[in-house]
Image (tube, rainbow, N blue to C red; front, side, top):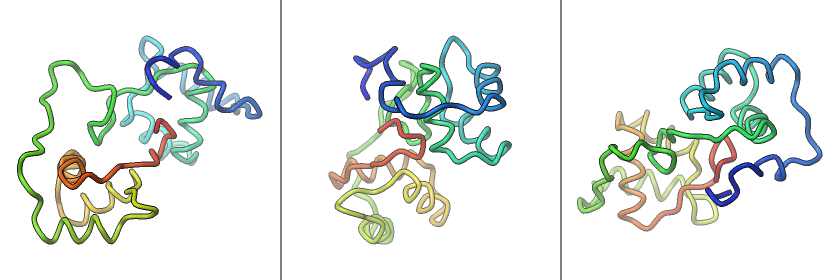
Length: 143
């Protein structure tokens, strides 16, 4: 969903509901009807819900997801643009290509590659942009 869909995120999940405990937790940590990617993932770890469950619940509560840890959406306007002028090294290129499924790299796979190669998550995004690799799907369901 895009910024044009703001206020209509729940439409993606018309057949779903949110457990009361999760609803209370989400509304308590959301700031100005926004939930950051990092807070969503932290909540998933704390509660045992999956990242997808947290994302779905955020949609149903019409919370806007912000601060993608891959740098793909919801960043501060002050944040630096990703540098996609440097070609990624052979090891990273191979890891990205091996991680592709249907010509896309999942957000989860991007995180795994970053951890394995000891890179920042945004380094993976930069490499993907350089290699014209689309990152999708998002663990939270944002894209």
